[in-house]
Picture (cartoon, rainbow, N blue to C red):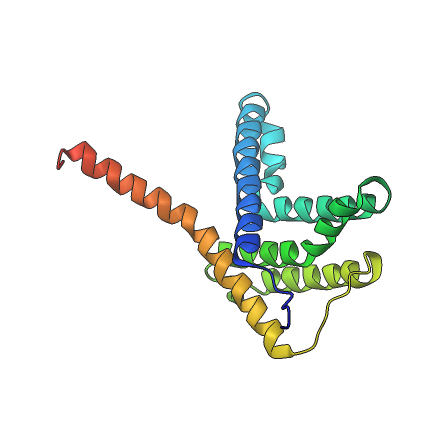
Length: 180
């Protein structure tokens, strides 16, 4: 029996949900901080508009993950180090796909495509040369299938939050109008 070294549905879904929860926390605190700063200092509020973009969060998340992986060589036990290395590629792919899902017209913007390609080059450099993570490439069809699975599952998790919000809004309208 050949054991496939794929990510399971649960692993992809859990990491996707963790990233979405962290993103929503970032959006919540970022909005509150800017509302607080903006109420006192109009000049600071208008000059700090760059951190309102979600690209900043994804960059912070990737930098933090890379720092954790670098620190794991010295300070973490073997199990934590193994898990961080195992999910490094998966986390980077999910962040990349979340960024693409965010923009429905992603492929019409050359700036966003250049940003994603530069992100991919940096992460490939970190994966192979800094962290020395080995990826078994035996069959390109299996790799494409794995990436397609990651895209489908992370897209489902990404758009699920919007679907749940819309359904709860519709239920609130129906209950508010007194149909039930």
